[in-house]
Amino acid sequence: MNFTNKLFSLLGFAEPVTLKRFTGKNELPTRALLLSINEHLSRDIEQAITKLNVKVTKQSEGLAAKSIDALIIDASHYTDECCYQKLYLNVQNSIKLLTNNARILLIATACSEKQNVEENTFTQALIGFTKSLAKEVGRKGSTANMVLIANGNKSNNIELNASSTAPLSSSVKFFLSPKSAFVSGQILTINTQNKMTTMLTDSTRQKVALVTGAAQGIGEAIAKKLADDGYKVIGVDIEPMKEKLIATMAALQGEAFTLDVSSKEAGQQLAALANKHNGFDLVVHNAGITRDKTLAKMPVHFWQQTIAINLLSVITINKVLLSHNAINKGGSIVCLSSMNGIAGQGGQTNYACSKAGIIGYVNSMADELITKSITINAVAPGFIETTMTEQIPFFTREMGRRMNALGQGGLPIDVAETIAFLGNNASYAISGQTIRVCGLNIIGT
Image 1 (cartoon, rainbow, N blue to C red):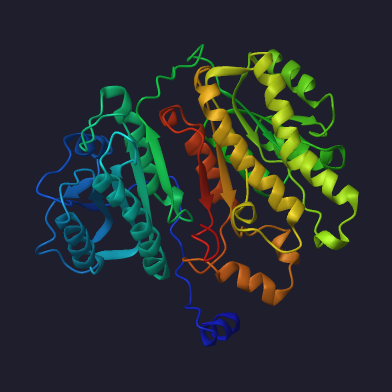
Image 2: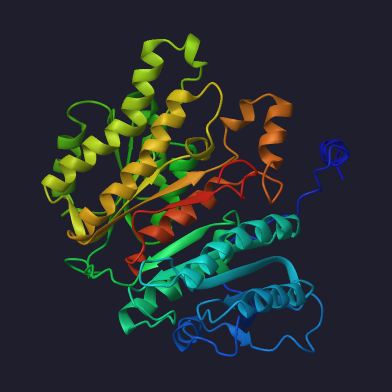
């Protein structure tokens, strides 16, 4: 144990477990345990998991300690109050079976007017259960998340058709894999009534991704990840970052484009760029700034710059791109929010305002964009290790790293993996949502 870990152990912070991240070879668990809150397993959930070719067992009896990499709980068939007891027993009896860096995933039916009071109550109870469980298992490098399925049916049984099994399978795959290493305590809703077209206009051509703020840090990681996934990446950044941007894009066989996203001409310039490439398939609004001061001492230009770049540019650029049909059918928009937009932060009223605005914007635009066969979502990073966070004073930096269930900071690739998941065609039933990539911060909801 190094000096820093010794110091923080005295303050009650356990030494963090090294997180297992995706390397290209270790995508899914070796062995998963699938259990239900009653006597039946959902056939459709079983089928979605079967598609992943994970070795699944349905009995915990006789299993050795630390022999299971993933625990999946089918909580979709609520019947009566006995389901609460079965949930407790299933998870309690399974905890000792889990390895470090294990994945726990609950699958349930989303709250809706078509469910009765007891069913909706149980769903909401599961949310509190999942988030609390995530904080308990985080010290082992493990995560707990939940997928809710909104299917519009009166029955409390999940009934999926062939087209809606794909997004469930895709979401299960993400949450069980090392790609979600720094994602925990998250509740993701899949809308199986989403009739969005999932095929690109020309499925044979290379997909094109636009990434703003792509020269360094998280933006660079996003660009690299998308290039690895086969996208033609167009990186955007401001003129002072031009040299770094060109080098980054050259390494990815991408294209560099210098632009101030808050300029009045930004939308039109990007629409023209989209036309040159036959439209964008993924637009990632990553560009952002911080201009920190307490509100009482904040200069007006600090406020205006932050709102203009972090929020208004996203709204304006999207409006222009959509009016020019510059985003292809089956395409996605992903916007960067922040944990500070969720929980707030002293000295960052401008930044928190802009990032909270992103969450509201994404949620409000989802229904409109579904009619255009486009999804829109947000990703809210917590403490991510970058050159910027290295400049934070030692104690503040270490507290930022450790104030989450996993007890450490995330990496830019953690944000990039989540964006790639949301931008994937198989995620077409996910829209209007915000996923936190924060290791489940102690603060926030």
